[in-house]
Image (tube, rainbow, N blue to C red; front, side, top):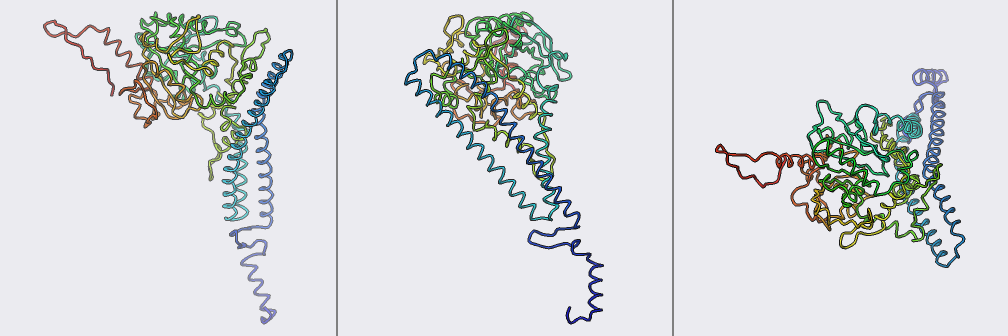
Length: 575
């Protein structure tokens, strides 16, 4: 302005201030874009961004500590049991083999820790890389407002994970699982150890067919019964999926092990005798033999109960879902056990003593062992980041939690229970000892050997349901009986609990009532001995058995002259 007269320069400056405002109120243009609306607003935005970031990082590390603490709590229980067991063995001479076992155990623990660490680092890298991209994207827009919006979204996500998530998991309890006192169930029979309830239909207009073929569902001891009545109000219940087809559906519920001495000292023989009593009651009520339907460990118990001969004449059909029938064939569990020195393959390390002096298997330690087996998916930092990503939906979406996710977390958090020693020993032996080449199981009931080939001799019609991506009970473990006997196979997508949680919905693409499992789009990568051309969901399997029974009991059709017509031998088909 040196060549402009002073009066003119003053006028130009005044005009510029009137039109553009002072410099601290002017829009600044830089490599990061357009920003800076107001001097005081600018500093307030920066301060709010800093406050949001500090709080979100505080919640972040508090969340990490909570997940790590949850994972490590069973470790301290296991460590105390370990030291107690080793102290009891101090009176034995310390051998070189004992020293080798301790070294092998240390190497095994280092191996697990390294696997968990690598999985956690991978998850951390994926998440932080995504966050870095979002920060750079925000910096490329209008500063500082875009960074403020980013910090607000991060705070909402951390707040949802740390506060809202645990609250939602607790609040889902009235909708989740069995509520035997809400009028939807009727108590049918009882023993010292179990109660038998009939599940009533939840769907309007459906009534139980008293003359229909009855079913008794056997839940697993480990997972509990609630997972089989996942979200009845949301049409996601394994039990009610059958009941809503008018099938007389019963579920066996174990009594509280902490309060019931008969449960604490229960054996496999007790399980079989109680199931025989329930089968007698149900078969007499409906005038038909029972279909047993066992899920996971409940399927294994149903199989050995049938093979024991205690259910002869009472049970003529069997459904097992994701049941570990020969755990020695399972790659993941076998690899895990083989790395553990033989000396430490002892249930004594997982026992706890109740106030009445009885000893049971600590459910928290047992569930922790299964987490260690899948440490690549269950490491605490990995679990934290997985849940964090569940809330980080990107963009401007508010973090939310579905009822399904809340119910699964409720199950994993609150349904851990202790187990009877002898029942656990049956499962332990089935995981660590193989079925013989002749089909004889590594466990006995009533002192008698149990063999898969007896299924055909007993005339049991068997459907084996498996989950394609099950990392707990993989396909070779669940399908082991096909080497020795006939069975129909239904392969479902997803993982271990999906048959109870996802495919129990009648609206699911691969529901339990599927007529032809090929509709699920799965081509099993294994040879099925006796699948033939038929593969049905468990509901259709049971309903078809009921129809066959009706046809067999119906009087043969006659011609107008009263002569009997020849019955068709074609198998029943449904469209």
